[in-house]
Image 1 (spheres, rainbow over the protein chains, first blue to last red):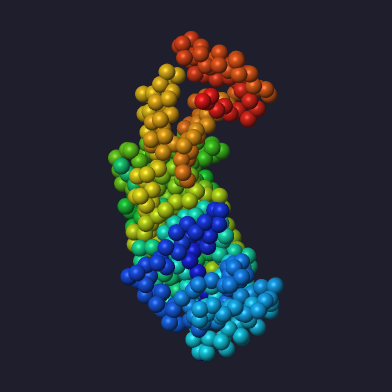
Image 2 (spheres, each protein chain N blue to C red; image 1 turned 135 degrees about the horizontal axis):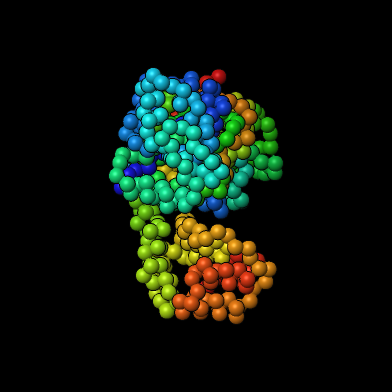
Length: 180
Length: 298
């Protein structure tokens, strides 16, 4: 069975977006064409079978968005709508408890990994509920100072085991197993 | 120029609180981690701290006499500088209080000959130093735990800053050492310093060269500046960067309503050498606006 893992780009001071909703260079590594970041990207694209994300992370487009991940996406929302098919990817809109959404995502992933891709609120819900097997953070070499913090509102201590670290110019890729 | 090295122990969620260290720090002690900490101490001959960290460390370390952990003797004997406007006396052997003109004081420390200047804890001080471009290296020991509560090292409202990774090192028990320095790109483009501003002011800070002064400030990245009549300090703003000059005098109370003619009269008298800056400001305090600010007429 595949793993359930959180995958997010974050600044050194813990923000997933900066002042005025700016990206602050957090996703620069995504466009790397060689090196360790590219390895991480290839791994993500070949290993993930389904993605879970929040409504805000999904955005407001009526047609979904272009993505290299031609797999089912489960968008958590209080305003469900019809599934969107877009260029090989599917966007399902679900208004259910995260445990139920995870069950659906696992089934859709068919043995491959399920990736929780954001935003902060969804990540926190999964962390609090103890539903993650692993956390992967892409730490960009930047202090943003303000913005949306990833690891807050948790009220629970989570011990981790470092599984891997890959150093690249635009991000340090850190992967941890969640100890249960 | 001496370097300021900041070494911080934090959790993955950025907590650095001392009170909970038995949960997120002590369990991850290892020879490798100790070696990193000891190296920082032995390659420095100055320890620079904010008040909270100083008061937390002083009593414990002062009581150790047997070079515990191979660092106690060095910590107790090395020159220590504590930044605080409220502390009256720095109670730790070989400590000096810096209670005013912090940036000037720290810059001066860097200009003196010597080894590295080490900073531990001191979140507020580090934020100030980062914003003033005085930190040469930021080292984080990231522990493999999300604590979920407690005070964070990186607080909201700090300035954005691009960095470059110098090294990442995987230590025992899942601890990560991440070493960063401020990105050079940033430094070259916009990080004007107080020294540069003072230099320009000395050469061009007169009424008849006002335009050149403004242009020269602009050339080093100053986009606007505010001067405060209250105590004569100024704040210079660039993109994502700000520098403050120290107060020139004790604060003056400010009048409730401004009067432009009187304001200009005092300026003229100062320019003619008939009034010193302080006397001019005293005149301004009778005519300046409520918040103590004045903006140069264009």
